[in-house]
Length: 375
Ligand SMILES: *Cc1c(COP(=O)(O)O)cnc(C)c1O
Image 1 (cartoon, rainbow, N blue to C red):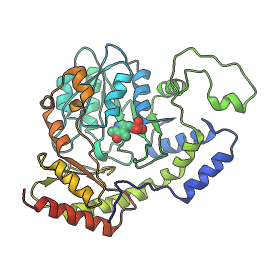
Image 2: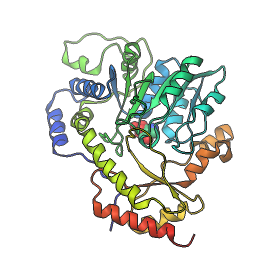
Image 3: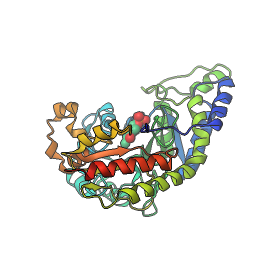
Image 4: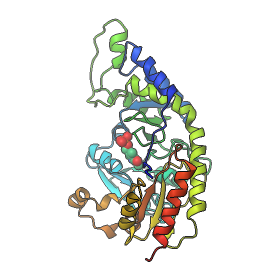
């Protein structure tokens, strides 16, 4: 048996939308991007969405739009993909890690409070695996200390907890449409915000700081444009937007399929000594299915699963343990002991709507026998 770690879910409707976009005169940022931005805002219940080339760009431009840069500190989690901390460096600021909650792996608001200094300007929580962070508490901390709250929603579009959805309490919410995400166009991202000034600023920052969009440059009569702000080249194009349009309508149906798979996994794997699961509270977006095993056995188990033809990933080894961050700040693994332990225990299993019942049974049976075999 060969079970890929991930298989995308693009189909006929997406191909048709892409073909239509290819026949259009404008291939770059134009009407299709606008349609995507409106549809995604409607789904989220937020006022503005700006389509970009990645979540990394979304995080960087959100920080810059809120005026964060050199000399500033931004508190974030070490239990994330490197993009979260790298984007803070790209903005010229310093990432300050706060350790995570041992039940969910999400940033611990108590640890965040302890890390606030006179230089702190923002907090970037990550809704890890799809589980929302404690946004009400983070919002209170941010308000009390006058900090911006920028959400890394790369794992969480469909989630809700305590009546809060992604983007609703944050000053900006950053999304990824990278190849393995629940909504994908290969590479892409977006910022959602209720702040009209910030949305307009990010629209300029995504295209060199020019005074009009690239679409306008060709579709209207020629007009001189100006540039009075140094921006980047992070604008989403119509082809990618076309791939995203119909997928937004399918988000809930696909989430229900993952919920079904999630329940099958939990039923099959619970009660095994030495195997635990991140806590799920409220509605998790269920982006990844991750289990935690004994750190001393983790790498061996990863090897055996792959020998059995089962695709695996590790989301993630803690960022502060990676060589670059060690070199830059002298971090040691035990500086953030919970994130370190989770990062050393983590195994992500295949988890996508196309996974079949037979494949799930095969994965569960192998997990059981590998873990229960002599320790
Ligand atoms: C995928 C991911 C990102 C980066 O997204 P890109 O679109 O590839 O830049 C950032 N944060 C988290 C938590 C991710 O999983």
